[in-house]
Image (cartoon, rainbow, N blue to C red):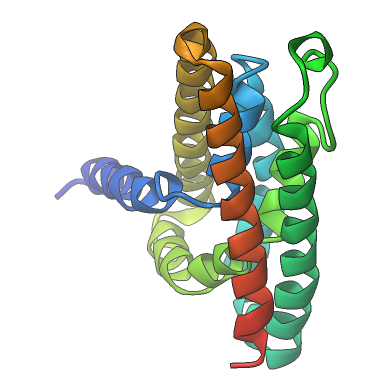
Length: 207
């Protein structure tokens, strides 16, 4: 095949592989739902926050620093610190689930951009994904040179951006259908998801 055709096929495979991780329920998804209730563009800001961490990480892996994330000390630090951060965010979200409508416009805890950064840093499996599946993709991208890597990085992040924006936009547009009880339940489930992931990350450090 022509090199350009090979690159197109690789980028297409990148979309499908990336979406398997992007669309999986996790900390980023949980905050996107809750932030999307107040702001339809929250998903975009969360994706930008996610990108602040992801682009430098992809670059480090491309430059050959992937082994750093395989060190046991690195895994323990990310697991403990990340787990505690997620538990804290989950507790804040749980307390916010019963706030009255007149206080809704006042964002609670982290803003959307900051939430994207925090939930990305606090997720050890994000780094694990990049140290395994992501590493393989970057190695394939490097076969197409620097431009191939850059195209790969942008395409992968766009999957995050479009999915997060879709989720927040859908939640915002459908919120008029939510009863106060529905909102409380959804926020409660998202907070439990964050606390659960945080507790599991802390627990997995010692397993």
